[in-house]
Image 1 (cartoon, helix red, strand yellow):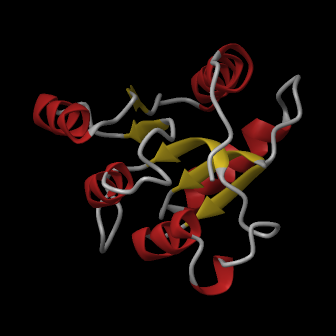
Image 2 (spheres, helix red, strand yellow):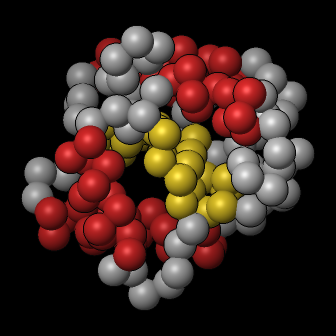
Length: 144
């Protein structure tokens, strides 16, 4: 099982995430996908992700809402409509602090909504707290 599936189409944000997650006190296994189509293939176990050994279900999905092509909200709606991913913890990790975006994400079934911090240090602190709660403190089951 991986700890975090991060769905992010901005290469700079993905790089920052990778560098910061490696600095955490606890080891975190993660995968970064850059498109909604790829995320749905991964979460449904289709295409190149049909082997559970190479595409295990994550403990947490961090989802950028402002993806090119299929939006994060589209991915969220898809995930909540499927038995396999209905209860999977999904956290919006977005630059948008627009109340309409936040309200829509909760209406679609997001578990939490986090606005990306503006600095490298603040992002590192936030990722530490996210990992502590979602990977250490939160009780969840293994997803199929």
